[in-house]
Image (cartoon, rainbow, N blue to C red; front, top):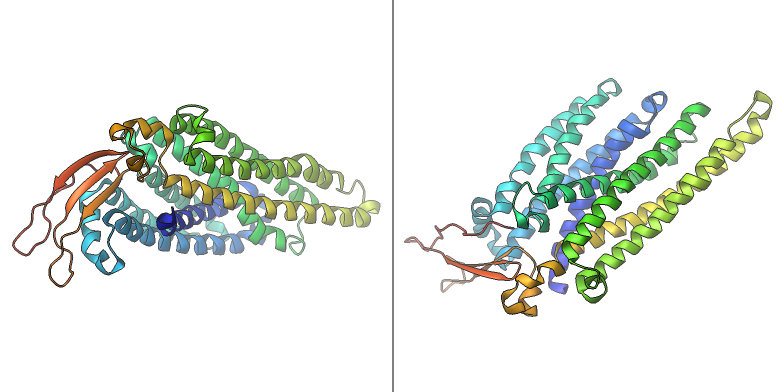
Length: 379
């Protein structure tokens, strides 16, 4: 596990950046009422831009990290292996969609900087949704082939998680701290928190349905949940999500009703009721911030699961070997050939796809460069 920590960190960074973009967009499109758009558009758009910047960086780092993970080479030789990964692997082919979608997203971001052009957010949302699908198409869900049900289930799960976690993050850093100074009308403030609660509940429903389907698919039964490393990590993730659900329930059934009850019934009651309203909003903001922290930890747990072997695939290992079962799914391994100076030459490529070993010895040209193709393109 320690040797995989850098790659887990890269995946977690990429997932969080994606969630931050989608969450900021969801907040602006579906949580902020029309009467508050002018007050918060600039802050949300700035957060969207910062998150897009993080997603751009994470996309490059992800490509480099996957290249190092597949080749088992040092960073010194990444320039040699990176073109091979991009040309010859399914991951490389699908990854090349990312730069295109990032360009689309950045173009839409520049167009939508003015509040009057806020609908450009839909262009960014579409581009980032496609990027999210590239994650599903290059991980465990793709092992049954492209465009299969597991891919779509994973995609919906990732989008719903991004709306929930990313939306709460956007509210925590870009909305709640500035809400007291926004001078919004009472109905607008109430509509904002009610929309937040409704969108979070809808996203949670999507997460629960797709999460159950994914768990059944990858565990292959109830026993592996308690008797496998993959199941143990999944239990940690479930515990984190359970705490977030409890906090969300408190928000929906305790704090939002308090805010609703604190709304002034008449002008003579406005001052004391306003103070109660501010206290209720403060409690809600604190609860949302804590919920965001637990969801962020759950996203890290999800990144750990991406680099583990699902128990349902253990039966596909050669002779049931646990040594091979411990290998990350869909990994290409390169056997080193080096010249006298230690420069990597053409590889012999071993593709481990859930423990089923397939070999493909690469040809070499006169200069010792690889010129073969991968037989398997599952990563």
